[in-house]
Amino acid sequence: MQDLLTEIAEAALANPDRGKVATYIPELAGVDPGQFGIAIATAGGEVLSAGDADVPFSIQSVSKVFALALALGRVGDQLWSRVGREPSGLSFDSVLLLERENGIPRNPFINAGALVTTDTYLSGSPPKEALGELVRFVRAAADDDSIHINEKVAQSEIATGHRNFSLAHYLASCGNLQASVDKVLGTYCHQCAVEMTCRQLAMAGRFLVDSPQMPALVSIERRRRINALMMTCGHYDGSGDFAFRVGMPGKSGVGGGILVISPGRASIAVWSPGLNRYGNSKLGTEAMETFARRTGWSVFGVSRDGGQGDL
Ligand code: GLN
Image (spheres, rainbow, N blue to C red):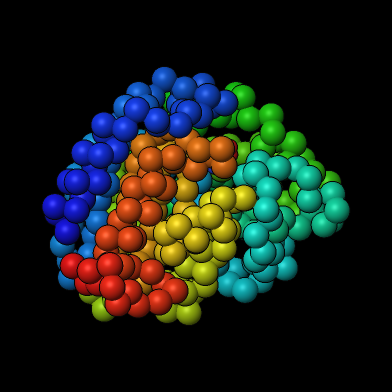
């Protein structure tokens, strides 16, 4: 496994075709696209990594996984009266379906749905308290108290987040926000500004792995459902392509991070800041495709030839 990670990282670091770094959040525009890291936390308790796996990056939409777990913890299945469970087939920040579907976002991983999730875990408490709870959840999942929010990134997104403000106002006009637009947006942008390294993110994803040695932060049923949503909606309009190429549940962020879960086996984090046309890490996706092919890991079937199974 270590040899495979090293090989993947070396190939990615040497690849000249790196995709484009997100620039719409000014604070992220200056991140060096030359970086690549990968880390894996296995069900057996090992953590292996390669490349820039100890460089912190902005997890952005990967945070929507933790936010969803928190919101479900607050209100359980009632959440599904306010947000759907279907892929949208549109970009992460699309406004298009909201009007047609009466302010009920398609799923919790597109921005509109994530704003509802944030509003749900806010549930009347001051943003500082709710964010404290989110960070505590992530720290407990990763077993690492040094994980924090990058205030500069949060402020940078709040200052330029016109699209997200418009989504939030539309949700509010449909009666699908309880807190004020400013509170929801402020909390959402701070949540997206959580910073982690690949190593920390792989650790934080362990609660979704479904193995006795992993932290039990959510029930088995909830874990399966979160994984199902990551598979169907975790990469926006690139979700079908990710499922086709990688075959494992994953959640991406515009910071270039991707969290991938191999149920029963491992939590994997990969990061490279350059994005493909869907806004997902280009080299991260390609690396996961290679990883899945080489290990034979897929939720869609057991590999009998080619892949090496449980390395
Ligand atoms: N904070 C980002 C936004 O709302 C997250 C988007 C993403 O990572 N895809 O635009």
